[in-house]
Figure 1 (cartoon, rainbow, N blue to C red):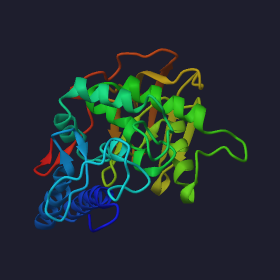
Figure 2: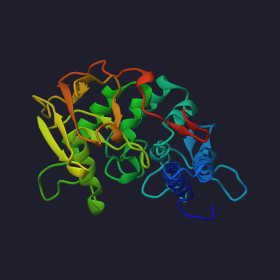
Figure 3: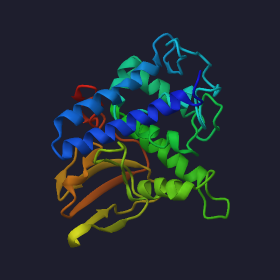
Figure 4: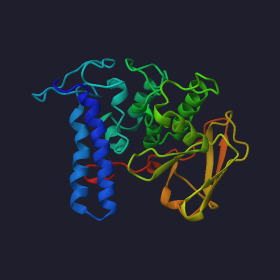
Length: 284
């Protein structure tokens, strides 16, 4: 109640702390890694178990319930319905707090009843940064088909090759980048980590130049906007059973072959296929 946008700021700081912990791990500074990973876990202090939403707290520590669609002083350019999901590095932790995989999917389905409802709504606001990672959280519930459905619908309904073809402010290229990542079928879903989710490309072939002369080729024969689902994937000929891979797997060059479909499939439809999640004790 002292700082405007306190709940939003807490979540953003948590993601920044997580990213700092991964940097510390990369330079083998275990102490700093642990410190910042613990700080990242403080996002749970803003989760109110009484109603299942992230909420601001007063200086006394009391929750300030402001409703599903209220911004008040707790959120910036969004509300509790939308910001509750802004924990991209600990989706498994959020899934648990929301009652498990089935309840998690139900909550996401309700959110995506509308895709770009604005900052004061019980529904999604994919026209702004705080929600850009949320469609991929279905992967942590074994439902990549739902991610593909939401992403495909957003790309088709919210973007167009016209002067007004962006869903709001392009924000220095952020919204463009979101579309392009999805159009090639790879999306960096965990800030600070090298996880790339696998989706349905919009192009039959994409060549991406990597450092040191390496090449990533993404083949998706027959891919169009009419085939927004992934039916299977192979990396250098080896079957991929998960809807994600690490950049390290393609850093030296690789060929990713994606088979797309007009209908949902059961590919990667398992909790064991979920991307990693990082709680305060590390990977879960």
